[in-house]
Amino acid sequence: MKRPRSTSSVCWLLALGAVAAASQSAGVPKEWTTAEDHRQMMEQLGIRSLRPGPSGNEQAPNHANYDEALANPFPNLPEVLTLANGRKVASAEAWWKQRRPEIVEDFEREVLGRVPKNIPKVTWTIVATTETTIGTHPVLGRQLAGHVDNSAHPANAVDIQLIVVTPAGAKQPVPLMIMIGGRALPGLPGFTPPGGGRAGAPPPAAAPPAADPPATEQLIAAGWGYASISPSSIQADNGAGLTKGIIGLVNRGQPRKPDDWGSLRAWAWGASRALDYLETDRLVDAKKVGIEGVSRFGKAALVAMAFDTRFAVVLVGSSGEGGAKLHRRNWGEAVENLTASGEYHWMAGNFLKYGAADATFGSRNAGDLPVDAHELIALCAPRPTFISYGVPEKGDARWLDQQGSYMAAIAAGPVFRLLGARDLGRSDDYRTEKMPGVNVGLLDGQLAWRQHDGGHTDGPNWKYFIPWAGRLLKHKPS
Image 1 (tube, rainbow, N blue to C red):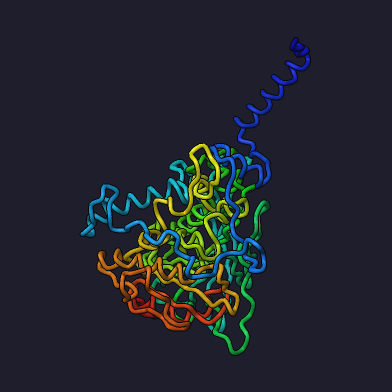
Image 2 (cartoon, rainbow, N blue to C red):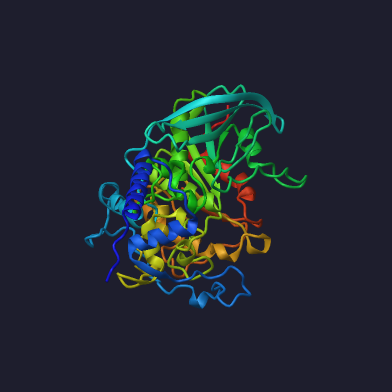
């Protein structure tokens, strides 16, 4: 016979439920671990188990594949210029009105997540200024804070950290590159990493005497400005932080739904809010603002360019899986790495389905994705898009799959041509096209590729990117 609960036990359970309900209504952020958040999303999706991703350690039993003969288990990519109903896209109008919205919807629903419609307003304030030099060039530096209205959820504060640097004495508004990651400027406070996530990239070390000048100095010397944005001030780079940052603020501290945005989309959103500010800045030519990032921030830069057509140009540095690399390639980092607990927060929750080994819907893999990286690159067309990589010998690991990213750029080419732009100037056969040699740039068109002879950085490509972008944007230094 089942024993009845005591009156005190029932009262305790009711009180506990009331406290939990009050906490949720008050918007107190849910405090839990990455593992707990990852498991909760799996449960929402009906996933019982995920396939483990390959190891980046080539000595491990489950090491990633680096055999080209095994690299293309899903050789046929989704057709970028074919509508969902099977009709071919033959005009720019059909691209903009029909095909592009279809691709955007697939990425938002299944891969990167949706930016909510109810995001609070961002108010920008200049918190510090300085007049200094970069190299031998006088500059004006400003540090800003972009406060996101959190009146509806006071427990979660989001203040976007931004540094804007422009040439002193410029006679006209200058083009500018937003660089995702931390680049300090002497005389300004610099970025303070919020709690709950990895900070943005550290300021680059001083260049050795024989190296190129830092990208910031090259930009200023060419009559450009630059802005550095702190991604961790927008959204943490881990799953435990998904109930905080801008994602947590909009969700009032509660877990994501399967089609909610992940960190890549959040960082890109933050870059777009910086562009909002730059549109009010009389020192900046807001029609010539670009976006740049390396590694995970290279992924975010590509996402920002793809979704916000105000960005005029992009430099995508060593972005790999989740960036310019084809998901369908079996080489290095795989979809299953992105669906694991270390990286899933970059993506929409729904992306986990494509790493599922056992679920209520069966199992899925990269070949089931409705879109792939070539279509993310195609969303940037016809605007100038530069894909950059280094070499494994210097630290830009094979894990990133440089060839898979080149294939994606080849497959995006037809959209650039349809919209009146020039692609890489090669055939459209992504199955057989091979990368050009190291330090051989394909820079004649709006879609560009160059693999430099350095490591996990885009540093050696800036001296090619700046004149390429300047030519296409018709920038003439004053």
